[in-house]
Length: 376
Ligand code: PMV
Image (cartoon, rainbow, N blue to C red; front, side, top):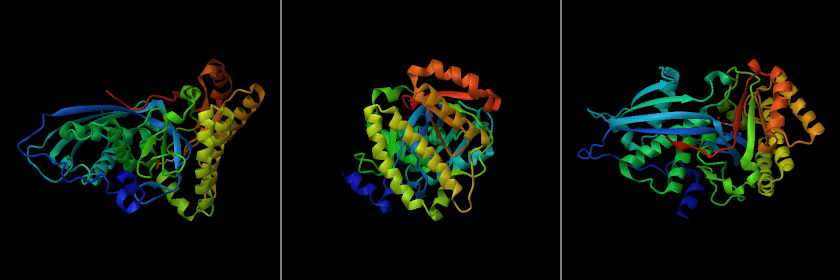
């Protein structure tokens, strides 16, 4: 319970994992080692949009953990021959140097030294890559930052044996992932996760996500998410800028209240296996997210004409067939098509026939709700 007292006080949350004792003695040099994690992306059904402090969310969010869209990351480490206070990092992305990504990871690791002081004692090398092309217009920050957080927590455990308890390992991984990219903290858990303190979810916190698999009726564990690629361009306004614009958004307070109340409604729908109620919230949340962008100051729009055309086709198909087929959107123009596995053959036939002409190179990614990260 000490934990809960800490996390509800924002002054304490940023420092809750600082630990100056996690430092290697000079006489216990560890063997060089290698840690590899595969971590998936996630799709928020209740969206996180608006933050404060160090990536703390203005409202709670609930996501489904994906499978096919993932990052593999290998972290190799050995003790530095000559100690210094810098982060020693080699970095390869899909086997090639990438100065921009390396700089981002380097800065993030530097910010984590109070949490993992041993990082400055090591020479490290990271090799990473995504299962989807970098240019797909699909955010890779959730999968990559969760993979990095998992590697770092495994590293701490390999060196000090301090994260043996699985729930504590997951909680710390989620906390670290959040510092890298807010939504990444939800990718740690199988099937579903909730991030953000909510009276509807015991032990929930702004500082890390908690598992939410138990909230799902079995039918939702067989949910498919086919990601329809409407544009593969990098988005024109980053999520970071979008979150910041919520601070001046006239609808911000109403939005945060709405997300809180929709979370309770969604939890009821997920538990009851109620696809219609689930789908209504998923679509309302997706459109609310983009409406908030459109009424920010300055206003901006990430939807493309084919996003709207697809939404109309999805609604028409649903009305005609009565199939539980719904859409969601991330902060971009690509459609996430959500439906239960039992109608996969029919839905895929419809996608191939009717929807692919609206997609970049007829391209869609077949994804589904899955088991969460895996140590390889
Ligand atoms: O984690 P960020 O800072 O990239 O923000 C992601 C926000 C949305 O993807 C739009 C919604 C969400 O909850 O994932």
